[in-house]
Amino acid sequence: KAGVTQTPRYLIKTRGQQVTLSCSPISGHRSVSWYQQTPGQGLQFLFEYFSETQRNKGNFPGRFSGRQFSNSRSEMNVSTLELGDSALYLCASSGEPGPHSYNEQFFGPGTRLTVL
Amino acid sequence: QKEVEQNSGPLSVPEGAIASLNCTYSDRGSQSFFWYRQYSGKSPELIMSIYSNGDKEDGRFTAQLNKASQYVSLLIRDSQPSDSATYLCAVNDLLGNEKLTFGTGTRLTIIP
Image (cartoon, rainbow over all chains, first blue to last red; front, top):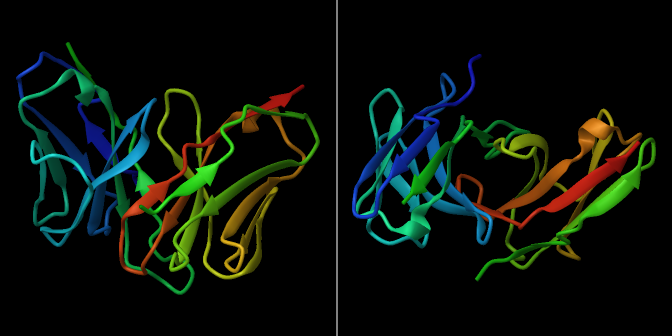
């Protein structure tokens, strides 16, 4: 099975702009979660989508939003970019829980966003 | 505020020795526990998951869970230089809830 894919891999934007990141989960996985990783804050949960619905949301401002399509692909959008939004944005997918595989999440390679 | 604590290291271990990584969590209702390995410049890679008290072994890796003490650990036997990475502990509070809370990670260096 192919792994989680994310595009683009690298992105440079300026303050005030907006950005859209894309994630394709492992085939058959319906849950997609997004995380932000920075040296100072570590890995922080942004939100999770399942069957096109946001099921969970982390403590991020409303500038961060996402959506999921019927084929389980997901996008996240950050509007009005700030310098502090520079980070590695990671997408993770998980499949149906089994007797020994609850909630296992598999990460994509990430999108490195730099805000200038 | 649910917390996951790890010793940030760096932890240096001679090649061939056992590396022991520790993690404590604050939410007693936590249900599932994961260890991820992250090489510099790469994304986290799942290496172990554990849900029940006790030990779970997979090759050179053993995860240990003690829910009463709110403690989970990862042992790496016969450590290899390729094991040098940051190890992230992650905790999930509810089955079916995909939100993972991560520790800050322990940087492990295997010395040849």
